[in-house]
Structures are given as C-alpha cells and as structure tokens.
Length: 134
Image 1 (cartoon, rainbow, N blue to C red):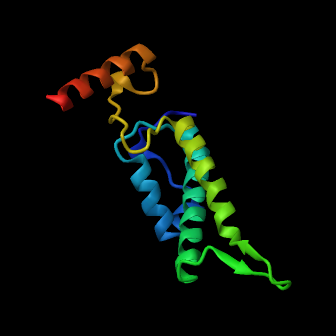
Image 2: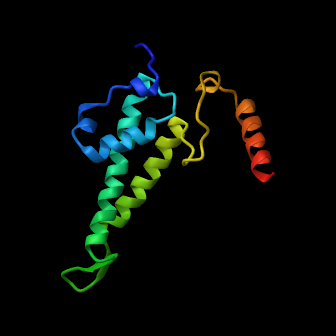
Image 3: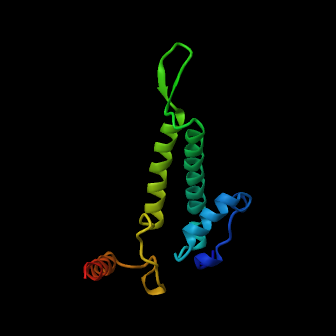
C-alpha cells in the first residue's frame, strides 16, 4: 500500500457519516505524518473518543449523579464510570501506538517523522524545554 501524508488520508465511511467523529479525525491527523497503515488504528481511536464523549453526555444528563439505586436498594456506580475508565485506557494505548503525546507532541517534519531515533527526539525535547525556560 502506498504511503500518504495524513492530509491525504481517506476517512473511513463510519467516520465520515458522523459529524463529531469526522471533526475528531481531522483534529487527530492535523499536522501529523500518518500513513494509510495507520487508518485502522486511527479509526479505533476516534471510536473510543466517541464512547468517552457519550459517557460524559450520559452522566451530564443524569445531573452529575455517579451512582444509582438498584431494585434491592443498593447504590451502585453508573456503568458509564467503568466504560469511561476502559475508554481512557484504550485512548492512551492507541495514542502511544500512534506516537501521539497528549497534545504536547511536536509537529512531525519529513526528516523527523516516524523514522526518528529516540536520541533525536530526546535532544529536540531538551532544546524545547531549554527555550521555554528562557
């Protein structure tokens, strides 16, 4: 399969069909050098973000309540809490797999794309911290 820059990645139909997911896709690929090989992983990442967003919406609609009373009178945490934990873990793992560093990542240039060495990345980050402290 030929490589494409992320700006030319073809969005899967499941992503295109949902406006929120399409915007999240655009946000994730903007300024990053993904290839067509990354499309399935990016798709899973967007889906997990959508799950997380849905849980947040559900909890907000429950007026911030994080527990419910079951039929026998016991209080239980909302199922969305557990789902949010799982979604968060999946998002972190997929971000790591894709080389996304929680919004602090450096925009990849062709010379420092996915073939960058660890040493080069460490040196770049040290320089950034040095400039930021000045």
